[in-house]
Amino acid sequence: MVLDTYGHLEVLGHVEFFGHLSEEEIAGVKFIRVDVLKDGERVETKYFGTASIYAITPMDEQAVIEATRTPVRRLPWAPYERADDEFDDGPNL
Image (cartoon, rainbow, N blue to C red; front, side, top):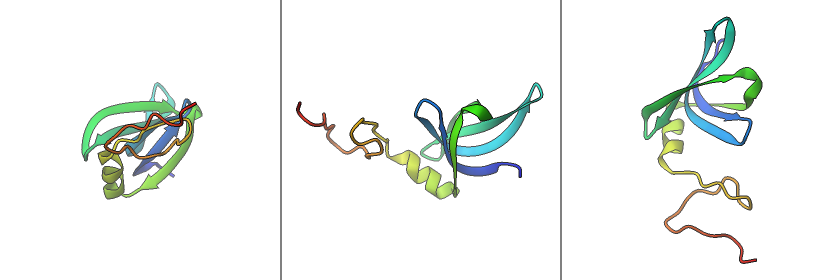
């Protein structure tokens, strides 16, 4: 199976990207190429070795564009909470 789809790529280190995913061979080694999207526009291209990939979630192009419109805020107590108008500093300890 050749990878050629839009989707969500998660790599080690809790890093994630949304964009167009495809396979490329560089110096005889397979890499996953991610054309990273922001608001439907390609903003950068990244390459990842397959050993660093944690998960790939295929998505349609429109879902990827929607996912890149709202920034995702990463907090230890709410890892996938969407950002809103005001930043919540979390629980007062």
